[in-house]
Length: 193
Ligand SMILES: [Fe+2]
Ligand SMILES: [Fe+2]
Image 1 (cartoon, rainbow, N blue to C red):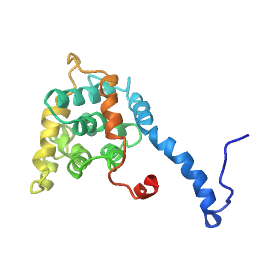
Image 2 (image 1 turned 60 degrees about the vertical axis):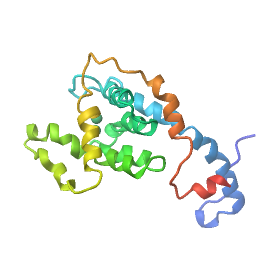
Image 3 (image 1 turned 180 degrees about the horizontal axis):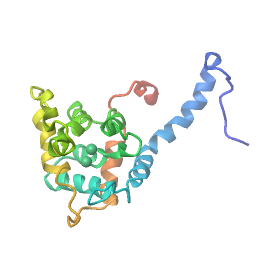
Image 4 (image 1 turned 90 degrees about the horizontal axis):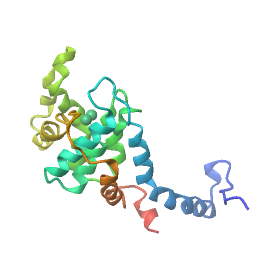
């Protein structure tokens, strides 16, 4: 017996029975999201891009610095994932992390992740002929200081090959807890059913 499949050929023909089958597959699939995130983070392993350490080590170091500074679990997971989009979002990597985190984190942490690229630019845009003060477009935003602090304390210093960061396994339980259930999702009602 193969697995049950919906029978429609166009979504216009879909029935409650079809969607019952699809929902039955979605729930276990959604539960494995942390596994897929971990697998994707591992794609950053060995990806140096000219930096002193690879992108996985940079991610681990950013998260470790945040954790050792007493940040809460959600913040630490945001730090761990902030550059996960480097593989697919070559021109907008913060948007990828923000999209993954969006259903699971506070609006403050979401904004921080989404805008970290332009804030991090304060430390290097001028070396590329760009304006390092690009972040100043947000200087009146209530989360300006919060996001600048993320870059100053955790993201920008996290390129030290000698820093004793935690390994991915250390963050796995935190990641699983943060991604256990979406707080904001248009599918939340269907998931409760
Ligand atoms: Fe980044
Ligand atoms: Fe980073």
